[in-house]
Length: 325
Image (cartoon, rainbow, N blue to C red; front, side, top):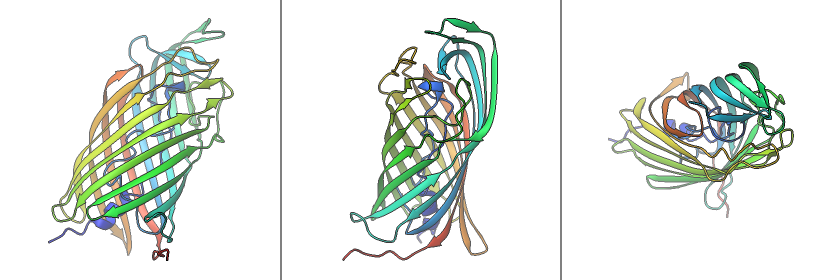
């Protein structure tokens, strides 16, 4: 008998947006695309309706040895960081058919806390002024993100393609080594696919994307182009529970540039982890919950650490699709 977990999988498919990430190459060790944000059901776009999702992300990592990190117009050495972020997202999947599939429009406003500790910082022209140990803590609102996603289905195979845009209007603190906002335009172009067999309950998903970054006008720093690949292999045991493995790979394709750049700072890292999903109802409201844990390794020229995601998704309304004649 087929498992009845498709509703939960469709809710999980609403996970299309991302928030700030402390641990990456690039300026301030940050990229607006959150590695690991996609996983099980990455290629599934939910049916027409309005959905609410909240991603809570916890991270702790460090930049080993004497590796330098460009941040706030300075270079930090011996960096350790912690972050706790919430990224509430609203997605509207319109009822009209678009290009033979479904179109989802989304928006996210990240809010969070970040603490960065550096053994020393270099500032001034080309890092000429030396400062001692620095600790910077911030709790504020980051740059909002908007997205557009197209999704299609063919039997057990589901796939999407989409664009995620970072809008630089968040609370950016110039000169600080901790920031939730990025103060630069950016666009992430991605595609994802999911093979979900309801007979055996197996979900095999993968997502690939490239992030293009604009220049931070306050620091004259342009982060290079970034590549990311995420995967998941999950087994659904019944209509409520699933578990499996997840992972990602990150590689900066081009170096950082601009007058404020102290070097290319091209980095890469891989991560592997595990996930557990739980589908349940609050009255008649279906809710999908998921926990993901990632451990990073093989880092080059970037921080290496551990992260935990808690994702809660639910429909606010479901509408009937309208076919284009």
